[in-house]
Image (cartoon, rainbow, N blue to C red):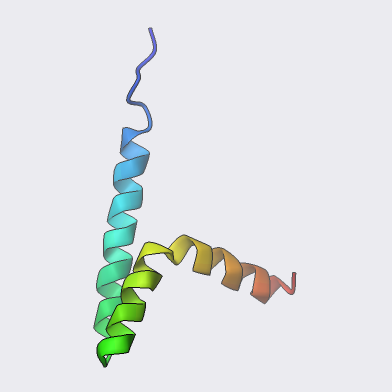
Length: 59
């Protein structure tokens, strides 16, 4: 017997990660455009994290 909602917990954790990133970046922002950029950063933080990781590794 298999469960059809086995990925639901991962989606909830990912959603909490996005929410946390939005709050973090929003608090760091100072002006209108920085707040607008913080929304983009909050939504795409995994891509930024992987990019910075590869940059740190010299890849």
